[in-house]
Amino acid sequence: MIVTHDDAKAFGYCNAGLRKWFPRDGVSFDDFRQQGVTTDWLRATGDAMASRLAEAVEQQHAQQQEAA
Image 1 (cartoon, rainbow, N blue to C red):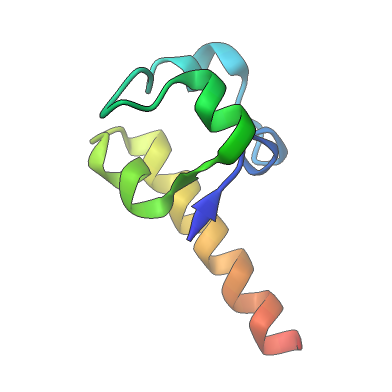
Image 2 (cartoon, rainbow, N blue to C red; image 1 turned 120 degrees about the horizontal axis):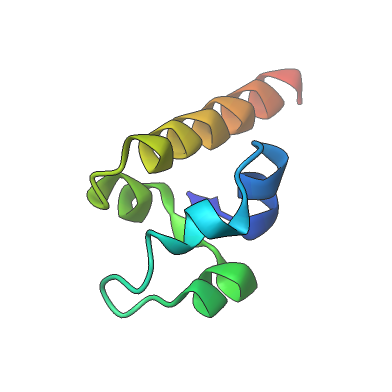
């Protein structure tokens, strides 16, 4: 599942905090802003905030699927 920069901002994360995850595994902050990253990629950072964001996006997606 893809997590976008907009998802992170909606979750309340600031760019300064988000930038700490980059670059990693060939992904730059600009790549993230343009294309997003997977929830697995976020978890692989080992960062608790990244993992919380991945979980929140997955939960939001599940809720949207249930409502559809």
